[in-house]
Image (cartoon, rainbow, N blue to C red; front, side):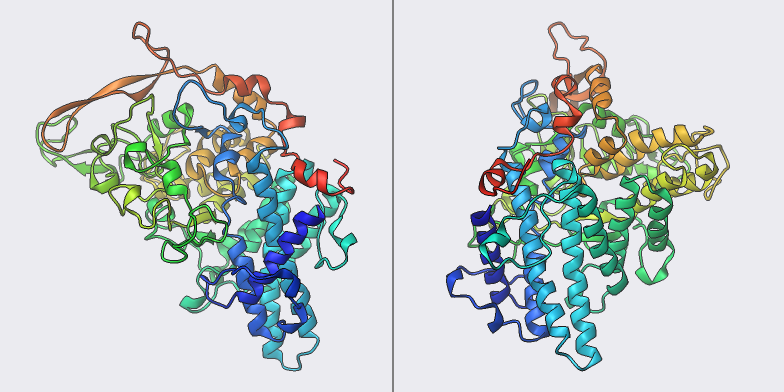
Length: 600
């Protein structure tokens, strides 16, 4: 492990030397043997430059592992080629030699090592300052670094080795410093909670000025603290932090009117965003798109259809597609009506309006062939834009550039995207607080308040609200007229609201939800029993010609067509998943081999 960590420390030092306060300044290769840390940590300018290196390290998409961490859950099918796949995360056959596991570990510890440089030197410099302005500025820099160190350890704690990982709270100097043993899960949790509490107490609720857009805030620290306590089923403590975010006007947080603003480039850093990682295609064009120093990401290509410049290596699972397609609309909401031509199906001859094909939430989360109302790449209908062949019945819209280009290949340099990753947004906080109020489905006393929070999220997307007719904040809206108790409301959160609102978002949100609820194996078994088939979709294309997209409309049930294909998801996962083996990633074998003190 010494060699691995030494390389990371050397890179961190180099980046800190070369960084300035601009977000696009990155590491240039030099000889780490010629570095002297005492030569450049002289003032707050140096500290801020070092902090930039921390932010830059946190851009590495290996930390968030959007593909593999969601393949482990019930969100996605791993690309084209149904019904066959060799994806070990989807099949629940991964081991400690997987590149994605090693890269996630390495990238996360890189953030920690860079943060430790800033923290150690910031604390040293504060001792030399005699004016409060310098002390306050340095304290805020340290608070940001501690936030990143803290959140990095929450990721490690939640994802690796049952939470037992090495703690680095210092900058290694001697050779022995590189060989750190495993700390207990309790020690790791106490460590990251302390960091996040420091960030919560010392970060501002909001930052002033465009130069500070994207800096972490007290709201981000509160969200991570609340999530940590929720994951441990400490609902009372978690609710304190979630309530603070929702009710404290200083944070300036509110749900955006249009859900699409949470996924688009135009809607970045909006009022709903609490923690967001910034990307751009305007810098570092000389780098390989997969270089960890890049300031863009490759997720647009990852999710887009093949004929639109994508690799489509992750597509919505069958149950998720149907759940989106079956969402009921609030027909009292004018947003659910679109203009139509007289005589066309569903068109009111008086108003010349018809109901939307699918909900706003569905339409901005996934692309399906028979969505007539939400344009896709190049402003075309989904059916015109892509061909939906090879048993591909839906694509994720999230992370793709469908709203700004005709194809992902139009982006120069190629294989890049500047769309930000939203790690935490207010809708997630609403739903987590709702779970706290019903104490995970055990306390009926919080049902009414929890339903109100859920309905705020649903109302934003003009969905039919839950609860009795005429109830709640929006009595005139359509409701499902169901009386919920804590248990049934928890079921709704688990299998409707959280997965459909937050699909593919955050850091392993869906996987961690299913694991903490103790239902992963059961979920795979349940889904493996479901059957689906794909019908054809005839339409008139943009040139006025009749076209059919064969096998493109997913429907429930066995295929009624002779020798037709039936979709079955998670059959192998239902057999293979073993909580003791697959509930956490193992420590990468490269780390275990290198560090004699890692007794895994």
